[in-house]
Image 1 (tube, rainbow, N blue to C red):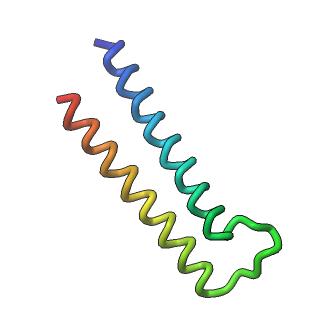
Image 2 (image 1 turned 90 degrees about the vertical axis):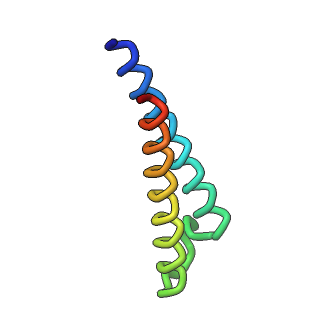
Length: 70
């Protein structure tokens, strides 16, 4: 039974890692990670939207994983 828990944790870690990488790629594509960029209200709003969407994606993926595990 503990191996199942370990597998579940590693799958959760994999989901989190994927979402982190995907978020970073989206932020880079939008030019929001450039150290030379000027932080405007619009760029801040876009960054927050991308991060919020990523958090929602992670939450749903973890919910689906846990439902599958049941």
